Length: 159
Image 1: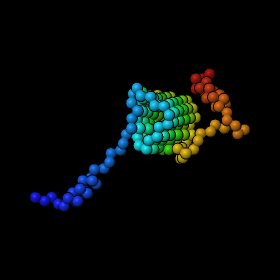
Image 2: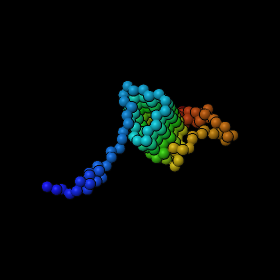
Image 3: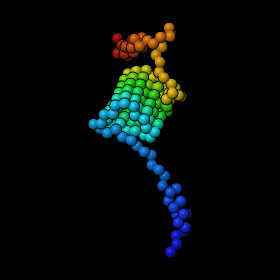
Image 4: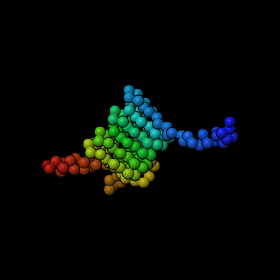
């Protein structure tokens, strides 16, 4: 009984099973300190202290915490990020997200309920560019930005 030649069956089997995308995980209760680089997707339910560089999608789950710089192609934040975020394509801040730091992204979606304290810059090359806060005199001016934010809060509160 012949079902075709062996090489033909082997080639058919190899081409029919496409590789599934790899997902890396930092689990709940896990703390990673240092620089973490991943070419594929990463789900963070634990805590990362340091630099995160993801070639795929970085997902910060509801219980996940990132303290430091986060760079990725795409990202979804439902937990907490304290530090710079630079996303090459799309960043989604879920309703449970809290971000304390500057954001640089090509596209941004902010769901109702999310908290964002910082500066946002929309750019096509977010993964490569750096965020700089500069006043008219050409020097960094974080106090002026804080005053502008406080003034906007007072105006929104009707004071």
